[in-house]
Length: 292
Image (tube, rainbow, N blue to C red; front, side, top):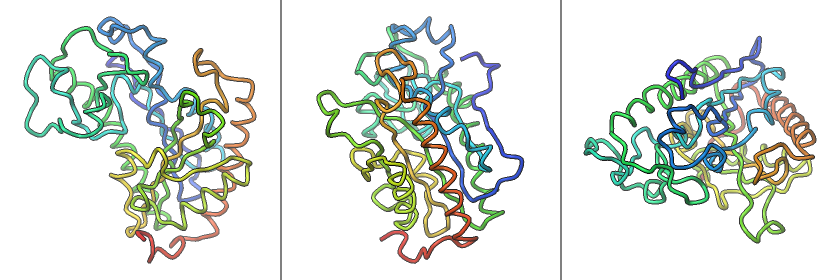
């Protein structure tokens, strides 16, 4: 990433029409020269961690009346769906500060705020990093993205009385499991980040477009769902994982023959979701059972 590059794109409607916010934290693909110079992998290999084209699939959101926040930095550079300081000490030549979370399951898997590996399990770096490098990425990428998201949520709650955040991702096809996979996996932290009525609403909307949907298996949500989801306070956060095989060539990182159809399906889904959220009014559904 060039320090002068904007860390995210925020596409705003002329007037927000519903209490809905969309995010795409992993679709960024600005692999700067500095990153490529220090990585042992080429740009094509680094893209294995990327949610390619997700911001395009949901790109109709602003025209339909709701904002879309998309990271421009790649996940392999800095992961916006992690805590700010989930860092693997084995990656660094110097000591990490005491506030770093070095023992999370994400760090152990090599997928902390600064990833050690790409999705295929290949190490990204051929040398040790300095903590100052991690701090710079977090301050210039992670923090601005989350400041923008927090402001969107605050503004939406102030206007509508509640907010539904749809955190949009893509999922690779597991080896040998093409027939068994769902088209979409919704993650609500097993009911902790999003009330059941809201999760059911989204699932029904996706099913009406012909998609098979699974809940919390194998993706129950990441930092964004855990951190921002406060169902009893009127902030619902739901992670959406869309199967890459539906819309792209996974090995070539190119749009597939069904890209336009999938994009149209997501546009219809967002339109229907906006109408349903509007019908529920300022209070939304009964949230008394939000954490059940």
